[in-house]
Image (cartoon, rainbow, N blue to C red; front, side, top):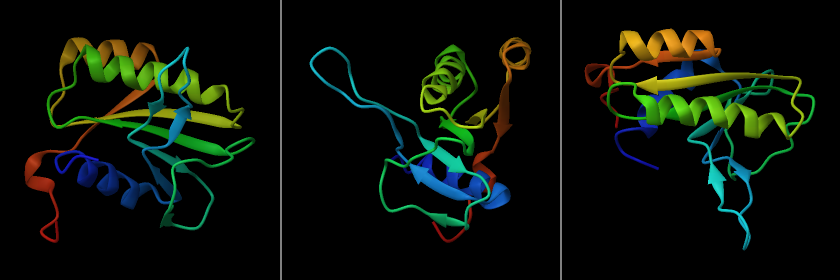
Length: 132
């Protein structure tokens, strides 16, 4: 977890609620594939808490995929958010919403995000809670 990203993920989760799973393992690594983790996954309609672990059965659950970067939205973050949703769908949730959290937006990336059902959430540096 990153000191520049984790607080953004948690600030978004504070507004949404549900069960936050940080560094959710969406693909287990083996000799043929690398391990893939999301910055966060929120399981909606669960008690508001931060889960102590990084795996969870999300079959038939409503979830929010979160990818976070501490800079302007770009192709890397947008690609992470888009493909993370596709990887999560293999776990058979009822619904998946994909969110890219960043420090600032970009009009070209925003058009692509909207066309591919990725929500961009801008959380600026000055929104960082004092407690961190």
